[in-house]
Length: 195
Image (cartoon, rainbow, N blue to C red; front, side):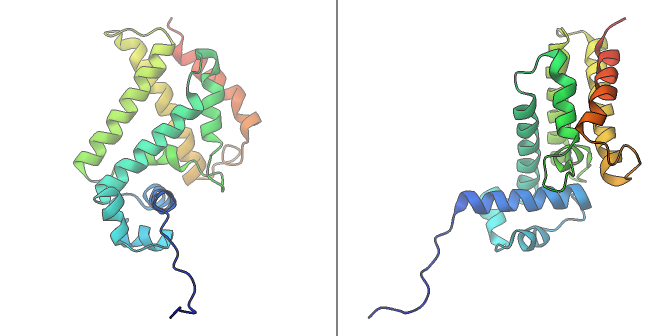
């Protein structure tokens, strides 16, 4: 005997995992780690809350996956960049990759989670990104001045992302790629060039 009900949909694990990552990145960037619940994320993704444990083990695991995917996105955008291309790649990130132009992946790197392990992961990723940027400018281990300059560059870039996302300070809030490229290039050139 055959049933006339609709065919059972097979779960698409990759799609479900991506839905959860997208919803979590949005919530963590907008509301912060502490204020975000796994139920909020599951509801936003339109899936059962138990799937967070299945795919990410915990809220901390999901936060770590969001940070990792954000850094991976930054690496894809900046991958293989030469020093003279860094400003353009940073502007691509500042212009926002989400459909609404909100640079959640950058804002997520700014958010303190309230969880010591998650914050350790976030800071470690920022440190690694700064070392890669410093390396493009000629950094070698022990050159604290150039590493500091790379960290200041990242801090300035994240500050721009924060102001664009939280304050809508104009004209910065509505500035497009073409508006940002000149000032960001000048900033990066000035900071990363050792006197």
